[in-house]
Length: 77
Length: 286
Image (cartoon, rainbow over all chains, first blue to last red; front, side, top):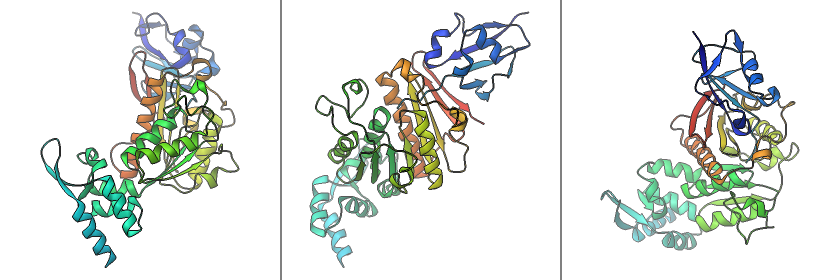
């Protein structure tokens, strides 16, 4: 039974979005950092991490059905 | 006595009119507001407030009045906002707050307009390239709504000048273009015990949050101020005008709600937007 998460990468990380962002397969146990490395997202660019709309960390563990959102630093005005 | 004469002058120049839904109201035109202000040696803003206190609506605010009460409009006219950064976000925020009738605007930016601003910065035009952003914004406010008391400061905010130049307004709006200065502004606003509305944009993405003095604030968004970089993804992506305009509208809406003590605020929350896939989501920062 495969497990999947949803992924949303904002701003210049958007180009690293997987081809199926709404059903990205994971093999638990897996952390945010492991998923981001798989997508080639530089970890120092993962400034703001949200799992299911709550602030999370690189070390947060993901499970089936989770929604992961990642923002790089954004400072433009 | 003078107050009675002033009230009488306002009432004498009021005109009965109808809202689009046919409900009646008493209207006072900008022309008479300025004549009465001259006659009684008051500011136009004071005349507008005196009219509203008698349920006479300055015509320029009539389309506010189905959403705002007369007391709300008086509150906005009596309120003050400091807008720091008058580029993309700050230009639109200034425009919206001036039109809404926020009575005192303190506008801060040390830069001049450049040609590369033209794609997104409201106040930049072919004619204003090379001109102080603060001066252009102040002039624009006086053209939109001469009742507003506007102060412009052609200076870039830094740790040394921040407490002085932001003054002591009812709200501060962070429209800056780099992360490091945002922390300086936040510290100054907290020191003055003033709420801060902060937003940032890059590409077609943006985020907005509202920070009260006791809130943790920007470190929840950008991490520790020591490690926060100056520039973010906008250096690589630039900004399309649509996200700038929309994010500024969101900031302005938070400002108006703070001033009116109404509605839901984005405290400890981050409104995130991505216009490419129409993502609109509120994230919990705590």
